[in-house]
Each structure stands twice: as C-alpha cells, then as structure tokens.
Length: 198
Image (cartoon, rainbow, N blue to C red; front, side):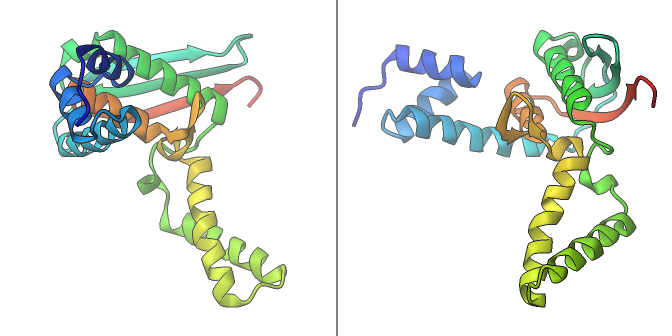
C-alpha cells in the first residue's frame, strides 16, 4: 500500500479541482496512482453532476464574445441555480469558453434533443445512399450510418462538439466537470452567433 502524502493530494486537487477529501480517497482507492485517481474523480464527478441536472436553474448570465477583428460575435445564455454562482469567476470563465466554442465551430443547436426527427432521418438517408454508392453491403452501410450520425451531431450540436482547447473531451464534459466542482446545476440555454455579411 503506497503512502498517500499531503503533497500528492494537493497536486491532484490542483489538477482536478475536486475537494481535498475526495482526492485523498481516490488516491487511497488507486494505491497512489495519480492517473487512475484522476479517472476515479472524473467518473464520480460526472455521476454527482448527473444527479444535479434536474434541479431548477433560474439564475445565470448572458455572456458575449466578439472574435478578433469584429467579424464574428456570439451572445449566450447560461443558467445556474444561484446568483452567487452566476458571479463566480469559474462560471463566467465557462461561459466565455463556450461562447468562443460557438464562434469557432458554428453549431446550429445546443443539444441533440433539439434536432428534429425529420432532419435526422434525412441525414440517415443521405449517409446510407453514400455508403451504398461506394459498394458497401446494406448491413455494413447501416453500421457506417450509425457511426456517422454521431459525427453529424458533433458538427451541429454545441454540447456534442469536441472542446476546442482539449478535443479529448466534449463541451458537455466541460459543463459537467464544473457542475461536479461547484455543486450546482448549470444549463447552456441558448445562443445566437453573428457573422459579418450573413
């Protein structure tokens, strides 16, 4: 059993933002393995965050971002449970990051539940026709469509997009991580993206 030193706990806490005791327990659970402890904290954080997603969010801010040169602008509403969190630097930083994501990647929807069944079916038809056209058998074409539909959601839905600063995580993970850290539900409500000349 590895000795869990305070410096290890401090380092893990700085990396993950998780509470001190949670960091210590994760290191004990993983016998001092820093990477595995980070993973444990992330899994537990996402589990905690998912429990908070049903809580009412009637506070928050409207954040704006104008890309250098003034050619792209974004207005974004992000909600939280309390005014205290709305004024929190980490919450406001999340809003700025999400607004920059919108400016960079031009999503159409916030979440995939907003995409109409008609639009999804239309995309499925197109993707299947492309796969069949390339000579794939129907059963293989169906499997290809399933994978490509996820890619379609990544392109058009903000929360499904890989985060511009760290493509290993999605925007939804960025939000969930902050929910787990601050202990309040956060909802990306809506956005408008303006591009000069459009």
